[in-house]
Length: 524
Image 1 (cartoon, helix red, strand yellow):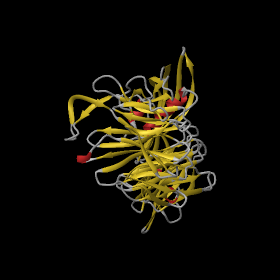
Image 2: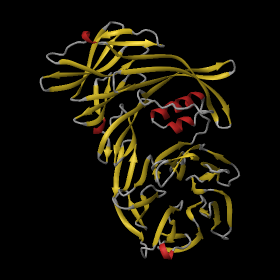
Image 3: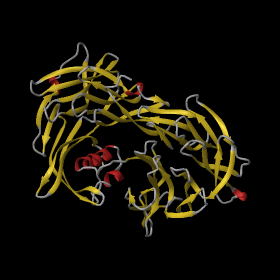
């Protein structure tokens, strides 16, 4: 994949080349496309299609041939632009009976001339364009384009140079059996390097039968093809899971000038659980915390409450919100203890402070705190009636622990008609407020509230299709998210969590989950 100006370009297997940003996934070119790189200007893409090199003009949305393979036994791979955009490195290799060493070639675009540079794979230019970086025999190599001198820099694979020339990312294996591979970042001269990811061992799977191998272990995952963003502030990489099936996640690392603080670490661990990424959540801990990811109920939001020092130890207090499709809402208040080490702050222990559960029992909405006896919030029979509509079931609810108010969705029927309404119970006055009608819906799965209580997002089943509605509580406006997702056909839309006033959500598109952001303040 490649990135420029916040747009990610990536090939999807058997589907073609796509562009992705925070608003959608857009098909650009159909075909068997395997690799893509964006030009320094951001206006062109060089890509591999059926073993040949081609260029795509972003503005004109047109493609042209660059180097076509001479036969079915030949193929081009992994092209890379020079920093000035005048040359392209690529790998030329044979297959089958004509298989040969992978040859790194250099194409001068103006003259269309090609010459061999080195033997290896995954080439790229250093920032000064006087040498190249590449992989050969599981080593990271450099070669001077002036005197031809080759140097082994480190063991590893998939070298990637940041566009500012300052850093090189690569995948490196540790010693041991089975060996673990992780992401490393080095200065361009390789005088210093740092391990970015921290892999671990897991139960081993037989790749042929798809069954667990009793008593054996394997790396929890492997990594492929790190790529820097155009501004060198993000590092993208594929995390590959080898279980009963092989599948990938495209991950994004942020480069920061400062270490993540205790509150950021705790927030990151909870976000990982909301993303449903148990392995990532574990990376924030100094120990194995066991199974953290809730299934039913599951984590849907969080709030950092406080942080500080107690008896010389660092702590962070946070609420985690859990819910699921039945009318159920839980608030877990937890104190996280952290310490600072070589990997920055990590969570050393967790202590439950209190727990609240809001649900429906015997025709009443109740709240129970710390497993104490339930207290009635309101009775279902006291809910208001809207004209000649009949009240049905409450499907989702949110409890505001600061006010004691309850937001909930209520199904109403009139003859053959059915609608889903959003209501609020105000604990201070004991009154109900009709907020809005969310439209025709068979059910709502869950509802999450923005921490400042400005918006709610409701997952709904509308005409047999899973979608999400965002309601602005102040302006009294609603937005169906499938209407703002751009590009490829949408199969479903689901929430994840609110962050800094933006809704992180995902749409199932082109057979995969694509994470997006919705800014309710934006007019675009």
